[in-house]
Image 1 (cartoon, one colour):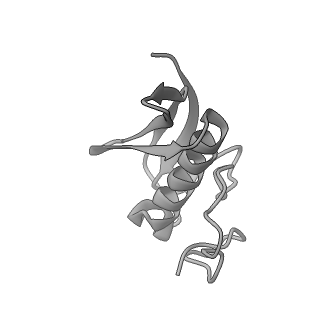
Image 2 (cartoon, one colour):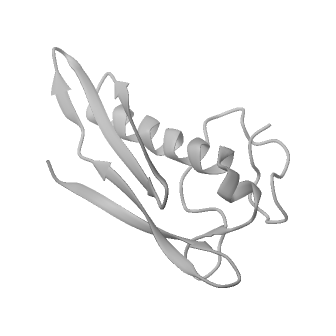
Length: 112
């Protein structure tokens, strides 16, 4: 199964490491659609899937799940996670109703 990948960066004062985020193409199973995703942290792998009535909904929900997972992460809270030359919004949407306070000093609303 093919995937698309976004590479985030996890940084400290002494090192930087890639954090790949993979999104697999939605697949149909018994009338529903599912989109699997993975985040490869340096010390763990987080994977899950989102389901929807069609492939577009499954993909949208997977993107929101990724956004929430990243923004709930200790790495985000510590301000160590980055994308696109230092941006800390990562380019993933958050689920509706989760745009509250900031979980770090960045300008992207986090989860409450």
